[in-house]
Image (cartoon, rainbow, N blue to C red; front, side, top):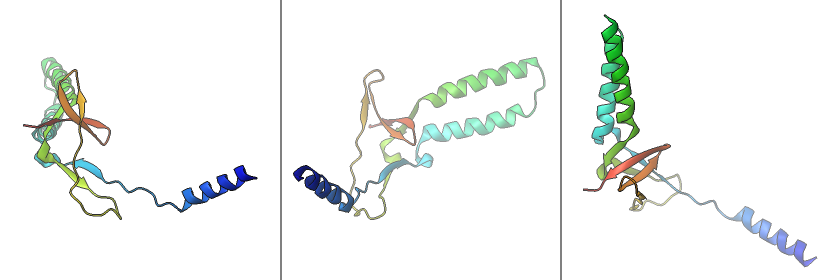
Length: 122
């Protein structure tokens, strides 16, 4: 009987407890030179691939796409490109960003929208 009573009390306490609010860190793409470069490269590639004039042009487009994929695989942004968006109900406070460390690249990074963005701390 005590087991049932304690489990009911703990279940009631869990259902009454308020959920934890947590904001999220986002990246301003206009303050990150690497993201700006990727956007310009995509625009230039679309413009260039509209017209294929020869076999060499097709090869050049393929090589350019490969370079763009390699360039987009690693994104490095300055620390000032990150900003904090508090969740609804969260008190406005100065949030401190925390980074993870990649030992292979010897650099700090942060996951933003499923993408690993390396942070230039200098």
